[in-house]
Amino acid sequence: MAHIYAMSDIHEELDLFKETLSLVDFSKTNQLILVGDYVDIHSQNLEILYFIKELQEKHPAQITVIAGNHELMLLEEIDSKASLLNDITLIKWLRDLPFYYETDKQIFVHAGIDEEAEELWKWGSEDYYFCSKYPHTTGAFFKDIIAGHISTSEIAGEVDYHKVYWDKQSHFYIDGDTRVSKAIPVLKYDTTSGNYSGFEKIKQDEDSFVWREYLIKQGE
Image 1 (cartoon, one colour):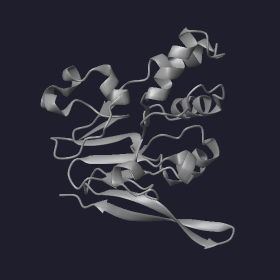
Image 2 (spheres, helix red, strand yellow):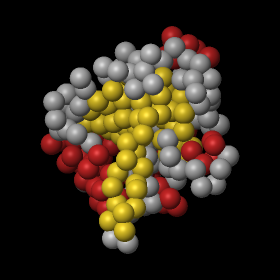
Image 3 (cartoon, helix red, strand yellow):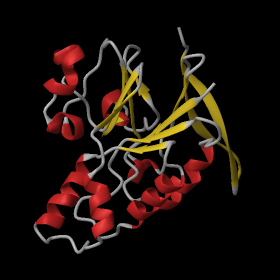
């Protein structure tokens, strides 16, 4: 049995990210897929990138880091000298980030793919689809698609909705509008049962809370 965890749209909330990482079990063959937007637009604070890069180096077989549109914007600012970043090693790491990660059952991507291309989506999707596709897509696809980019509150049409959004078919959206909600949704997939689950904080008193795991989709 193994688990795949996914998070997205951290937007420099490093302390919150570290707190949420407590949910991830890095033992055995479990994986963590990070689905883009680690920095904010025009950011000069790159501490989150160094942390994620070092975390990936510590768990190279278990962590996949995918590019989001904000990482592409940062690279554009580096190329135009608008960014002060001059760390060659970090810049190379950023440039090498993939646009998606695929399993037998899922596609993890920051924004989305061209679903009309069906099985040819890798070749039919232009680069902007992967990082900047808008609006979101719902409905059935031959693989489950896990994406961020668009806040789940927008997708759900509820201003206070910041959990994982499942469209009851093939799409899971995990951008919890972290800067507003102060929460990073975590999607967990059990490769044996096929169950998808999420987590929520349950407050115990003024100074403490516990995490509660809840079922999102029962495996078939």
